[in-house]
Image (cartoon, rainbow, N blue to C red; front, side, top):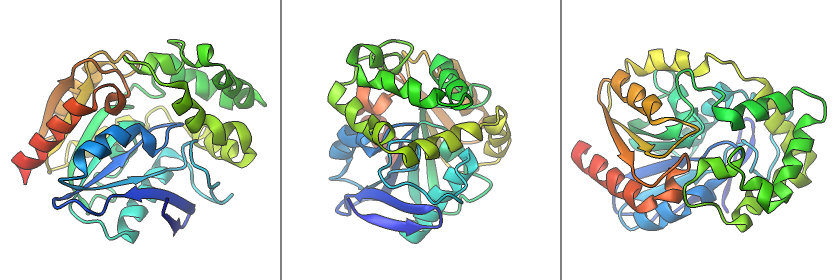
Length: 278
């Protein structure tokens, strides 16, 4: 994977660079990497330039500098820096699971032409669900995060509804789980990065972001997993209502991990949204 040196450290990314259309930037969530978007990238790459950064949220392979700001806003600022360094303009920014992209409007949004939020942390649902609350609690107990992460060594435990199994309708191949969690299980510095992110959690982060979203004057699509239990569809509907140009759709047969559960339906909605707003 290509890499780029940013203020917080080295970021890996993928860049199809061969689409004839506009640039789509796909942003993954907590303890996932860019592979959560693989099926969507394969669908979109003929028509768009698709760029997928690997943010320091637990599945990254290059630890960040000890001085890096790994709060939610710090990671959002790193995403903005990534867009600037690659000189990506007029991008369609697509977010899943984490709420990172919501923290740019009204702060560092000059390169965003359109915003797409698929099932993600938002409003008062932060940290989200039993999974999010469990991670947060574990990060605040000495050794707690390390012990919790050991459960991802066991396929049955990783597939439980209180774990990754609760984020998907179709299930996740265990080979993918091993890819995502290998850095956390084998590298103390990666666990340090994730712990710093979790310990910086402020419950009103996305409520404050929502006030800025009310003034985001560009097209916005909220595409929510119809069967999402961790990020309930009512949260998505509330998000769409507060965005001045917000439009809400539900993706059938999808939980939180919309791009894995139903990438074809999501790709269809993205194509239609970009086509109608170009």
